[in-house]
Image 1: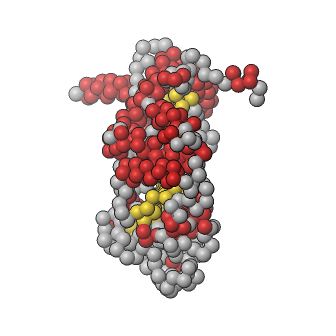
Image 2: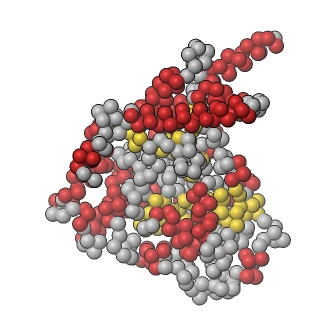
Length: 481
């Protein structure tokens, strides 16, 4: 690209909403990072701590790297309150590679079985990838309702012989998030008659990996989950998109994986938290680069590691500790999400399709619908009759054009990357660690102004849906009395 063309990419003065001429970047990942962290990285980029070389140039065998990693692991371990039973690993390939690494490390033999809870794209992807190595089964699935809700744990059906139970804590595409760690003791267990033949106790010894004794089950020792000492199932989670946005119950998990590029650093490094009992029991076909035990033994440097990305993770962990830790940061995340959800609920222009008790604090999904279609959504939500088909289709066509206008004008205001996932359309607001409250407030203000400028001219039409409903209910109550 010519230099003249590059100038056309520069943000206009109107778009430079934040300090240092920055726009508000709502991208779903890689995500924006706190300015404080970027400035510290800038200072270290040329000459780290006066050592005479850039952090980009450090040898992973040298003393400067070892010092940097000591600080990174120390800050992240302290932030997470990492228990001694778990190990902090820095791997590559993103959570996507972990979809294969997990079964390769945790299945007891090739074609063993594990349970998956499917709540969106990423858990479905993990299930599909793991199927290359084992007979995976679905313990719960919300695809039928469009992934707009979460299955209660009491409705999960678990195989008591499963090698592990996997869930995705926050689904970025569909905007659903588990409000707390699932308690497996609340789930239903398959009866002996319902247990798949390939996972029956008599089959556990066949095709065993790495010379394990026939019938041996990893994790059968004193591990218990969900507060039930009789539940020996091992819980695993993909926390890529909400990692370090709230305190994590690490003790409840045998494995946690998280790509760094959303909440805790740039792309290039994946955080893996692995418990003692899953180390050193990988299948024979497991590549060395996917082995948790080898990664631990090599101190996360089995090959040349992504030094700069790991360094940035350390800066982010230090930043979050400075903010008061994960409990305090959780309140910040709640506050940012509440501002967006309130703006949606109080307007007749925007609708969030996700069930209220499943809504993500990190990825807020909504549609720009305009007042007429907004009223239709309200009727559906309250159990009323749906509008006629012709009118509905007309409104949906208007919705597309209105959404395009919303996204275009948002970017003109310096509010970038609000488009929804390509498979769903609509809008999505990603509120990762680096998103400042000023950015959230700028979006809320724009949403209000957009609704006012594009709404019905009548004063009644400009009233928020919530206010109109309350007025209508009040009137009906007076008539009945």
